[in-house]
Image (tube, rainbow, N blue to C red):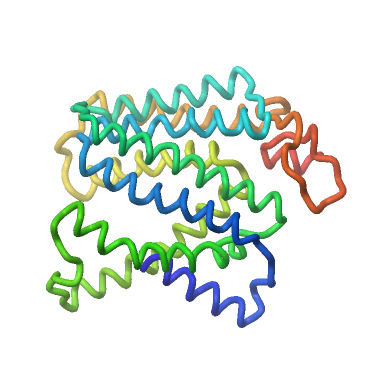
Amino acid sequence: MHFATTTLLTVILKSLGYIQTSHLPTADIIKFVLFANFSIVGMNVSLMWNSVGFYQIAKLTMIPVSCLLEVVLDNVRYSRDTKLSILLVLIGVAVCTVTDVSVNAKGFIAAVIAVWSTALQQYYVHFLQRKYSIGSFNLLGHTAPAQAASLLLVGPFMDYWLTNKRVDAYDYGLTSILFIILSCTIAVGTNLSQFICIGRFTAVSFQVLGHMKTILVLFLGFIFFGKEGLNIQVVLGMAIAIAGMVWYGNASSKPGGKERRSLSIPTTKTQDYATLPVSSESVEEV
């Protein structure tokens, strides 16, 4: 339903002329949808089958996996400061979120699928925007309808298989419907912000920024729902993570902080991007 709402918005904006017509091969759309859908299902199943602590550890591994994809597929090289700043973010988030850690075989498999499919989906967001020179809304316009259709068809059966509950058997009232509408409205902004951020920067930068969300969730939780669980370990973890994010922003924007040495994909532009840095600040200066 989130992606159906996003599709509706892109159709409206396209009819009003705010989104230009663009082309994206069907094969690329199918690959993207497979990665994205496995990411959504994998993350939810991982949380259902694993302890919260192991789920958080699995989420933390997405940054190293995203770095690996950029190094292998795009020949990106990170400076020492950039690597250390990423490590500091991971340590900080781990300190304030990882508590109980228990793992089982099926939960571990779900976590591996979730991590790799999410990293591939986020890499593909940047890859497709760069390869076909299309904007965030254009990419959403191509992928959201396919995701909406596939998830609406498969989702109810997957839910029933995993939980033994039918989604249509729920007693929907006015309150639940209003919150579903609110959720779908917020999801449009979430989907768009992800595509804009990854397209403008990279999947790794988006992952680092995403951990700021974790810190904000903890912080707002303590403000609105009481100080239970707030201790020196959590405060220290938050401080370490925020310091790492500031350091990452500074280190990755410097010349040599994060560079793509050679371009592995064709583009429609004539300019040579072989030695341009990945960070947006340096690109603008060049």
